[in-house]
Length: 284
Image (cartoon, rainbow, N blue to C red; front, side, top):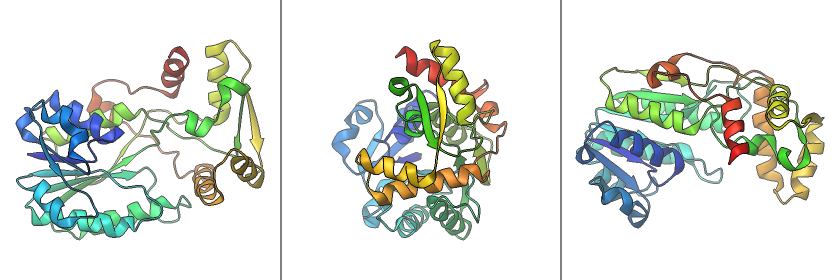
């Protein structure tokens, strides 16, 4: 059995959907905070059990019978995510899982100024000491592009801090590749990087958006502190804004520039590009 955590979230839920296309439902289990929100999976034959990283005993029950466990990483900046991940790993080991697959982060290496990187680095180290086989999926940035581009369709500008090349990747492509790894016979040990094939900058995205819309979309470079002040004026508190600023600092230092062929190999096709995603967003 494959047990997936966070299956009512975006990545976890999409991964379960892709698993259902590959293996029988009775070989899939999910561990969720609120079982009622997963009724649509239970109705299709997926085993649903309540479990959260804050409750290790419940996790052990939700992991029972699992050969593999997919640990979808938490992202609460106020929580001790390393400690919570450690508890989840220990629960999976105690339940008898033979492999743990963890959703890590692109560029999870020492020196990366993006603060969540430290959580992923520490969690990968815990996996390495766990005594079971493990895979860390170092997924490239897969959030909605508007999260980093801002309201460019309304303003006609991409007004953000200095950036660098990033292989912005489609979340559903990541989910499908994750399902392929979980359901397949090929073993992936340790960290593996999943990215779109091409890294692009905001200048590139402004040019792509201009071509797609027939408008001139301008790239405006904001000073870091100017950007922080603008985030505050639209209601984003200081602490979350400064956390996001560390992402830009990592981008401009090249920590997220790496691309690789593995995602395309797993999908058996070319992953969606940033241009594809922008076109779909515009058409929606």
